[in-house]
Length: 399
Image 1 (tube, rainbow, N blue to C red):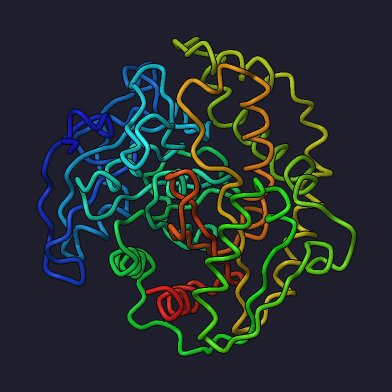
Image 2 (cartoon, rainbow, N blue to C red; image 1 turned 120 degrees about the horizontal axis):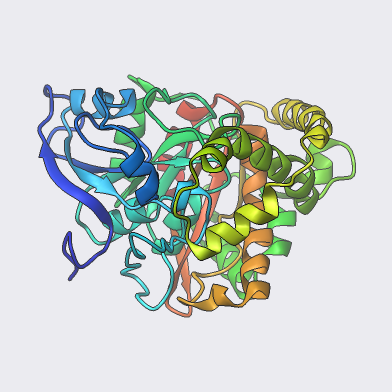
């Protein structure tokens, strides 16, 4: 129904043949436009950035890994401006289509990658995720995706946004392809043989989600896992951390301050010295964060380390935690013109995505059901550096 042009998913299209045969033979992929491809300029979702920088000399290492595994690259996909957004609406490059619900946003910042996969234009795509930039568009567009353990995949040749939480991951049209692509990026030859012992439902996240979204996901979990004979238990963030804590607080006191601080140190300095063209919405957002008191980041850093250690200590071999990927279905296009609507979506979504962000956890999102004919994603998280186990467990449960 949609092609490379009408989808609005691509910044540029081209064909780069694979270097050799491998596990990804015959598969095609696209690359988010904050990831370098030799001889092409990387836009970072900003025409000014694109114009003021030279073409990349080398491919990002993650791109070479996929080409070396037999996949063919078909182009670069639209990213939100400086990847600093979760809605997928780019003032300069346009809004990639969400083919499952065309009147709704695709989600960002890996919007083009999600759209290209959902439209069937490529078998899989790569993107980056700091606070949900792979997981959110995957959920809203109804595709599979994985953000691996933070820094598990090489970020050489990837433009920085929030270095402490950013990671390269994949989006795919089917779970089997997702797992193949992630194995190539993670250099996994065989998956874990660990058995699934405990499945936990993170009730804090279900409480944040819209009632109909939470109910639909729980009904589907019950249906799918009823024959698995695995213990499914409700749990709260306070029980995981062994101290009072909410997901909202994890976002506001840890993830958001670190994100703001690191963004100002990477892209912010460039904006201040070059005065690039900014979209009206981004300019307003930047004015809000540019006066951030950088001295406050020390408290966030200490709390981040503490929360990371507590989350890491909780997970045992064979554990999985399930929760809604996004608290809502995809908002309608133009809905974020109402600031209250935009803030509600961002606050609730980032509260949920903060869990794996702060925990640096591997997380897979799968399209599990629909609400009002719009896709709804379920997230499955495993412990720090348990990527192999997560891939194996999700395939056993949901393939």
